[in-house]
Image (cartoon, rainbow, N blue to C red):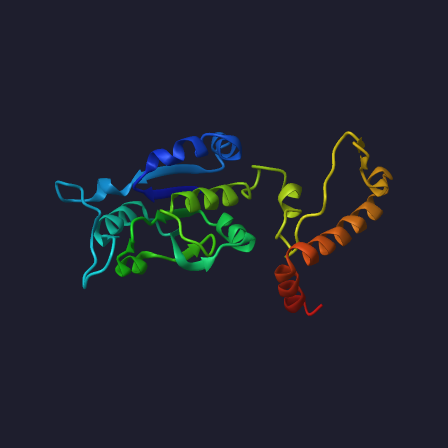
Length: 228
C-alpha cells in the first residue's frame, strides 16, 4: 500500500510514523508513507494556501488551487482520496478494514476555518473521527493511518485484529496475564482450565456482557443488524 498525506505541518508526523507498528510495516515494505506540505504546490510567491471567506465570516479558508495541484500530481488510477472533516462519515473499524484493501490513499488534512467547497470534487471519502472539532486534520490522519496499517497482511498476527473490539460489533473480552493472584484479584479459573472450547465460550459471553454494559449503543445496533 502507498499512503500520501497532505498537510501544512509535516513535522508533526515524524515521531508517530517512525515508531511501533507503523515503523515495522514500513521496514517490512508493507506500506510506503510520504508526507507532503501542500504549501509547496502554491504557485504565488508567498505560497499562500488560505484566504478570507467570500461573503464575509470569521477565520481563513483553505484555497482550492494548492490542494488540486497536489492531488493531481500524486493521484493514480487506483487512488482513493480522503478528506478529514467534521462533516464526514464517522470512522469505524469496518471502514478501517475497507481502506486496508486499497492500494493507494491520499489523505488531506484540513486546517483553519475550513476548506473551499470545491475541494470536495476531488474527494472519494469524507471522514470524521468523532463529533468534536480539532485544530486540524493532522491528528485524525495519524489515527487513520495507524488503524489501517496494522490491518495490512503480515504487519501483525491476523488473530490479533480479528478479536479486536468493534471487529464484529462487540467490545473485546477481558484479558489477563501473570501473576495469577494479584492483591487478592485472581485470574478467572476458566482461563486456567486448558479447555479451549470452554474458554472461547466464556470469552464470547464476556464480550456480549461488556458491550451491553459499557456500550449499549453498540449492542443495540448489532441487535438490530442481526435481528437478535
